[in-house]
Image (cartoon, rainbow, N blue to C red; front, top):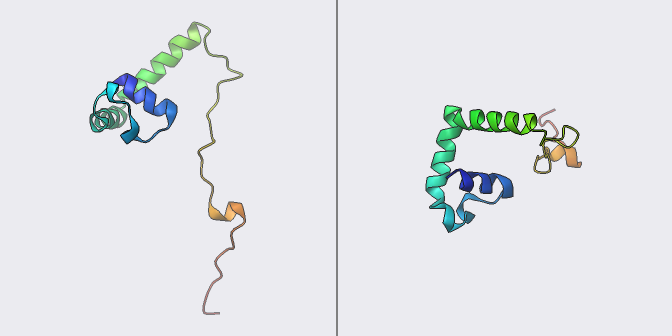
Length: 87
């Protein structure tokens, strides 16, 4: 289950594209959702990050959040602003 969740998070692929070796995508998604809402996934990832950092396997200069999938508002791309009507 965790391998399926990590595969999905690593690739960014839709849940429906999860390889069959991880089981039904609906089951993996349901487990992921339950782990997220209960806070268990945050605990697992936090402890894993601590262990990797203590072992010297995380380079703080390279550790960052990938913002390549952050969406900007339409106005950020130069879209016309809505003009107020009735004046």
